Image 1 (spheres, rainbow, N blue to C red):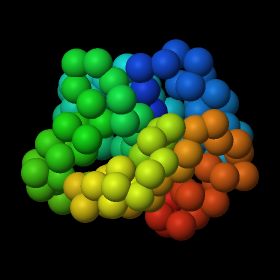
Image 2: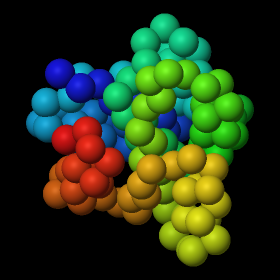
Image 3: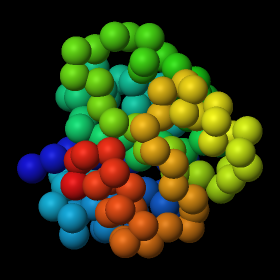
Length: 121
């Protein structure tokens, strides 16, 4: 079973994402900010991270840059999941190491498609 770490400061978004991911046969862990996510990754590396952009403590971009600098052998796929939809944000996310980008609000079909694109579904 593949594992996904959902990193979002919204409890509602984490709950919705968890429900969708579990129907896609993922085990799911949650973090409410980037710093908490880094701690969880040290304990257990997920196959994929569903990552919010705007969070307190450590933003999605800060988390992503830190994650990619850590040079783990088994880097997870990272799918940004955010309301930021302009080309500059998307380009910045990809340049920082994101594998894919999905807009909020998202549905099961959209998320499943993005996970297939990055090779984890």
